[in-house]
Image 1 (spheres, rainbow, N blue to C red):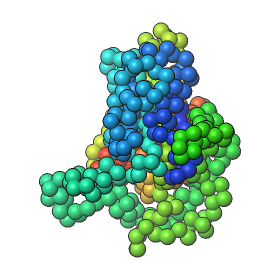
Image 2 (tube, helix red, strand yellow):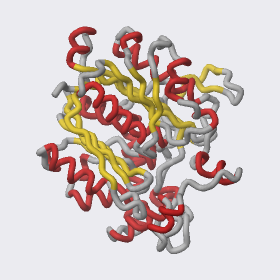
Image 3 (cartoon, rainbow, N blue to C red):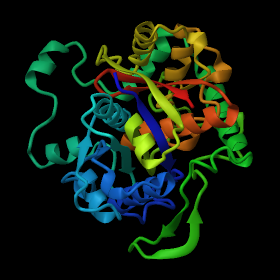
Image 4 (cartoon, one colour):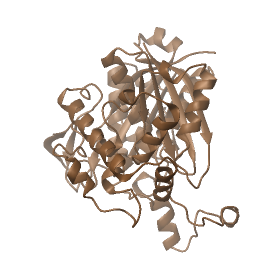
Amino acid sequence: MPEAYIVAAVRTAGGKRGGRLSGWHPVDLAAKVLDELVDRSGIDPAQIEDVIMGCVSQVGEQSTNVARNAVLASKLPESVPGTSVDRQCGSSQQALHFAAQAVMSGTMDVVIAAGVESMSRVPMGSPSILPKKNGMGYYMSPNIRQRYAEVPDFSQFMGAEMVAKKYGLAKDVLDEYAYRSHQRAIAATRDGNFSDEILPVEVRAADGSAGADMHAVDEGIRFDATIEGIQGVKLLQEGGVITAANASQICDGATGVMVVSEKALKTHGLKPLARIHHLSLLGHDPVIMLEAPIPATLRALQKAGMKIDDIDLFEVNEAFAPIPLAWLQATGADPDRLNVNGGAIALGHPLGASGTKLMTTLVHALKKRNKRYGLQTMCEGGGMANVTIVERL
């Protein structure tokens, strides 16, 4: 089977809700990433055969095929098509899978997988909340409600509480993990570990006009974080363990990777960052919902003929602190290899952009640390998880 290679990977620094990226239209922000991938690879943009872009809230400014709109807003020619993907939080990781599968099938040679989410301008939940308010109904059909009648209105917040309870994760453990996420993100920023992966963009005003200030540092990192401050944040529900401090931050951002074939490497003189070693995904219990990365990882390793200790670095999305902690407990992975530069609790979780965001961080971390294999997985709404294993080259 033909191989698929990542030759460029880039992301914007995360922006807080209403923060330094909120003046950007998401289409224009995504276009900046597409342009940067072309610049970093040096490829003729007319050679790009598709842009596959993850986005969760595909409504308003992110509607009507945000991927194609981003192409039209970029310097890519009109001949480059685009399509938008929604696998909830794994949307751009799935975009990467689709891009790699296109290359591995031999039907395409150069594909961009990307993601974008402006959670400031298109609030989380808009595709389901707005239609319901306007009398267009609710996404959960009568058949789903009948099948899961004992839990009629399950949510990711409820799933996080269920995971914490199932794996015996007390609030102080979650808060300590959240503090560690900030400390690792602070160290990574100060050590310049993100410098090769972040595309600085100008800060724009609400009307879209650009200023002189550049956004190049993840805005969600609390450089003054203390464990006492994290422990003091109010619980999201009485009797629970989840707070805004031990959950991922609402975030604006755009990310992307360029995936090419071996033929394209030779034809265009491209230098690979990594090789796609394994791709898989798994559906799981949609009620507890966020536990899926555990069985998905175990099955992926089995299918790849690998053991957990064969993997040098892990990126497990920190949607909520119980998820990576439960994942560590169940897989027996080395915690020192997990989210070594911090995760979404500190850096933010721009929903549909997080898949290629994590992959961008992973391939650059493998290079910087001179490590070989990396594994990425993330929990997804509806009880799913993608797993991607890459080999640094």
